[in-house]
Image 1 (cartoon, protein in one colour):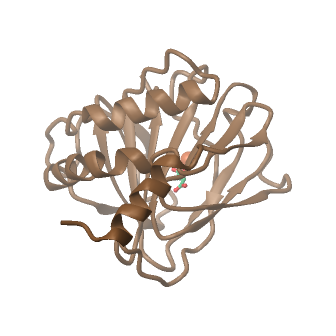
Image 2 (image 1 turned 180 degrees about the vertical axis):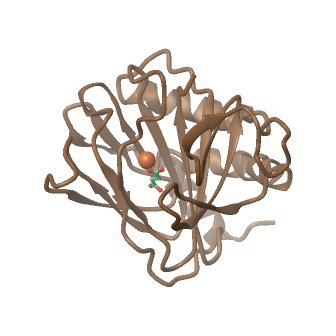
Length: 221
Ligand code: SIN
Ligand code: FE2
């Protein structure tokens, strides 16, 4: 039976209103939005990763990415010497990517709606794993066919500093701290803004351990 402390934390997590912080004209951080979903989401995520495990990919420029990647949904994002692209197949197994689990999809659709993007139909969920020291350089999400759909990004585990830039790589970036359960949604006029993640600091998260996992949902096809 969970003790009084566990109950207290559970209540706190559920009662916390999902604070909506605006970080762009059509971009929001939904604080703690994913917290009530996490218990249902983690077993689904584990099943996805058993089928398509994390692996480090190489960029067309020949660099090995520090974040390890996997995907679920009809399309998965991949990179290799030939370029960046979406593929219906996991290059490791040559099999289709795992189906996008219901809880993941429902969370992404609900968060998109909360941020003003009703009718979101994600067909791709990229799963990034960052161990301490891993980062994501500034980039635009522009391999998708559909820019009218937003990007929905769910943070789990160790905290991160998310860099949210402008439409040019050299534009000034905002630093946004992201914690376990936070969801960022950017779309519309902000859909192609540069973004990245600063190197993750050492730490141990009580649920996720020594890592950060980020799920990004998009309409790619
Ligand atoms: C990404 O841009 O693909 C990942 C962003 C993040 O890890 O927060
Ligand atoms: Fe991205």
